[in-house]
Image (cartoon, rainbow, N blue to C red):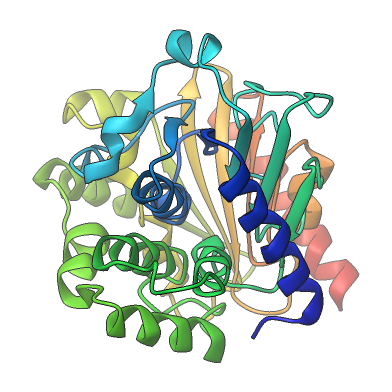
Length: 330
């Protein structure tokens, strides 16, 4: 579903790839499967074209992604500072701050910005942004499928399928549409191992994850006649089960499954006096507007922010914000 404008962008990007030799690929902090998959798909393409490739991910990378073949290209924060490159690809990352500020908008080198977030700041020399698209992996698929020859190998298809699966909640979220299903089916044709990818990256979890989940669900609270659901996680619970933040991936989906719930918040203590809030909407309500007011961002139905208060105060702020969303949308 590419337009003439898209094809022009593809032509520019492909020309850059052919012209230059050294590339840096940048993901957002604490990346999800869409971000990792999109980055590694491009990395695999570039390496098959005999390009020099380095990848940089700020923050924590989930253990489940570490065994992916192209993760060997990952550079440390110190290594990336001295890494020489001609062109950078920033994927699934709406701001350069989210990319660890490893590059700046006034960088003399070329920046290719590929993303599906509506809050993207269009900082690239070339911007391929589609904020109605379910996953950045879909945009990478369009780029690669526009190239001459069959460049989408089974490895690349796996990466992109993983990205779509993770950002659509295994095709359960409201962003699942004809486009995401169509591209997923094409990737299976290219060799994506649909069942294996889904099980390994979406369903499979550590036992400690379930122990933490049991505590979080036991303390889940409903407000406003069940229209608001709030989940909370303290560092002490993570420490008790020797769990990691990545073990909480997907927790918010359980609150979204409660009948009658319209807005959901998962509040995770980062440190005393600081909380990370993940927000979800199950209908037309826009949680990104609230997140942006507090320095966060995201999509209308999925957004996040950091709140510099303890859990109790953060809960009050989020509930107040949710109630305002109800009022302004009625």
